[in-house]
Image 1 (cartoon, rainbow, N blue to C red):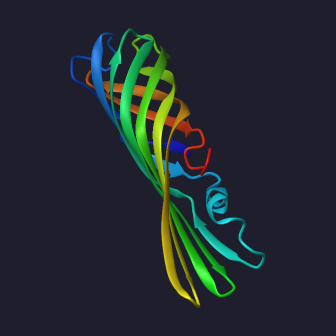
Image 2 (tube, one colour; image 1 turned 135 degrees about the vertical axis):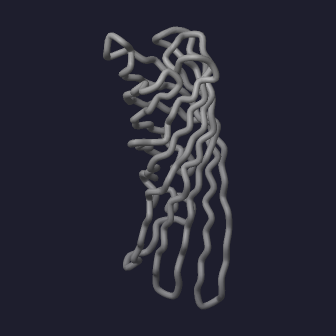
Image 3 (tube, rainbow, N blue to C red; image 1 turned 120 degrees about the vertical axis):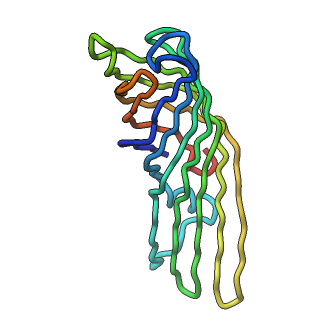
Amino acid sequence: ISVFAALCLALALPLTANAAEPGKIYIAFDGGQAHYAGLMDSVDSIVGVLPAGTTTDTSDNDTFYRITGGYKFNRYLAMDIGWVDFGAGDVNATLTGGTLAAKVKAHGTVVAVTGSYPMTANGNWEVFGRLGAIDAHKEVELTATGTLGTASSTVSSNNWKATYGLGAAWTFHPQWQLRFGFDQYLNVGDHGK
C-alpha cells in the first residue's frame, strides 16, 4: 500500500515546547490517500484467476489516517509508534452466471525511526526519511452471487511488514509542524505475502 499525504493533517503537536527541539515528546495526526497496488492480485490469490470474459470494476484508492506518538532524541533522530488505517479497496466482477464483490481492508501498528535534516538555518524547514515495520492486519470480504444463491466469506491475515517514507516538514509555529510526505507499506495489501 502506498500512502501519499499531501497537505495531510500531519500536525506534530509536541507535548512540550518545540516540535523540532531535541528531547521532546510529540503527537502527530496524518491523513491522505492510500493506494492498494495489486488489488486484483490479492483477490485472484484467494478465488483463483477469474475466467475470460469477466468484467471488473476496481476502486483501489481510499482515505487513510494515522496517529503517531514519538520522541525526538536529537535534531536528526526520532522514534515513533502509531496506528494507521488504510481504508478499503473494492473489486466488483461480473462473470457468466453471477457476480463477485471483494472488499480489502488493512490497518496496523507502526514502529519507525525517523531521520531529519534541517534545510534552513532557523530549522523551520526540514526533510525527513522514515524506516520501520508495521504489524499489519488485512481482511478480504468476499460475496458471490449466482443461480444457486449468495455466498460470503472473510479471509484475514496478520503479518509484520517493512515500511519506509520520505517527505518535508515546515515548523510554522513553535508547537506546530505541517508535514508533506509519501509512505510505502510493503506487501500489506497483497494476500499471502
